[in-house]
Image (tube, rainbow, N blue to C red; front, side):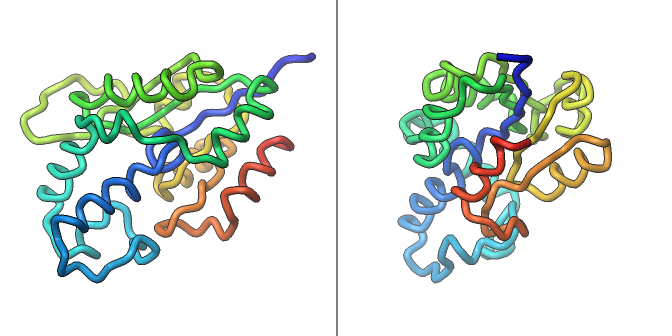
Length: 194
């Protein structure tokens, strides 16, 4: 087998269903909410939900630091794809996560995808009270620092567009808040020809 192509994967909402899992729990605490997951057309969804950004981030971060996050199952189609084709590529995880949750995220990745993903890189998301040095301010900067990669897979438009503007091939992972237009199965099928 020749040189393996390098795929860079976002973690939350690509390898797992963070937003969906968090949202189900959040809705239990907000029974008056009539919004359904498919209506989360913005990420972050605080405006759609009628809450403040600070309230949203506090709730999301509490979920990230909980056992519920650690016990989240990978997205079935993604895990099945890795089981069938994962060894044909090299894989890197690249995520934007608050510093205090990065070790939880890394542990989740290694526990669920460590057979294939051997490199975990994160760009710290800003949070009140955290003063940390910034080496990269966005994922596109991290991608350039990581070196040549063949494809970046992410659910957020700003990350996909920034990578593409930097000359990096990038693909939307289908979520209600992006314009993928494909199913998860169709998206994963296209990875084999990248």
